[in-house]
Image (cartoon, rainbow over all chains, first blue to last red; front, side, top):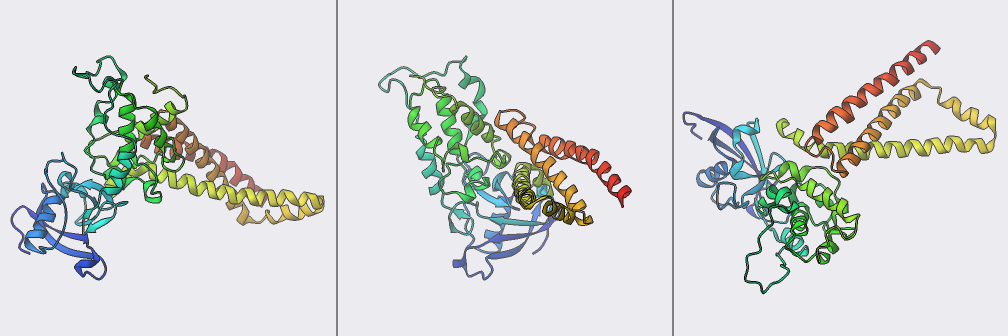
Length: 246
Length: 121
């Protein structure tokens, strides 16, 4: 592999699917990369120069869509936002997101993630669905003041992959779905309270399963304080009627 | 890789809490088993306690002391987090409070224990 000026040789170890014919499940590539390049750049270089069969996902390439989420050196991250120089290692270990079924190589199915997402009824349920007026968020509401950064979720599934509880429980809702439910419950315009609280209060899948490991908060590429949403929901649920707006 | 490990402090704290919890459970069984000897008379209890005079148990005593401190301080840390306190500083809360303050308490208790053991021997 010729190394150009400004480039450095990185060893990239990628988890491959059995269908590709790799005996131990990991394939190594020596890839010349510049420090400012990202893990996604490395994957494209491998795809172009080494192995055309490598499968991974990406779309926006600027950290907006969450499609390129993979595990880099054991940490779930967005490949397009992770520069190789920040990894302080000459070897990159890239694998699919944990806690999700692998379709091929680095591409995972987000079906389990969205199955949990749907359980908390994520759609906005206004008081009057037939109203023609804009449903404005009151500036003075706690929702407007306390939740702006929590609304940035791009449903990349990284928190789902990083969650230690999720790795042992199929029933657990996962941090993103709980955060979404928290936002809807905080929203003064939304009325679907009880049907959201029901899955949140489940013994095996609800908020009580969280072990406050902060993995989701640490891994979230948008900096959402997911553990804070979960613990705030727990405290609120100790007092029935806290979210009741009817 | 090291650079990212600190991000998962909460995971480290949780694993430590589980390990220390299991160790305390093991100790509790041993403790109840020893106290149970009292039902067979004072001599039986004395005989059981004699086993713990072995130097190995002095080391284990220090280990028990460290386990109790770590489990207790980490438990308080978890309670604070559940109450919404220290979310932004949860890593510092673990390393400074649970580990740092825990180490100071351990040394304050362990040094007299070691000195007393040395004087007795």
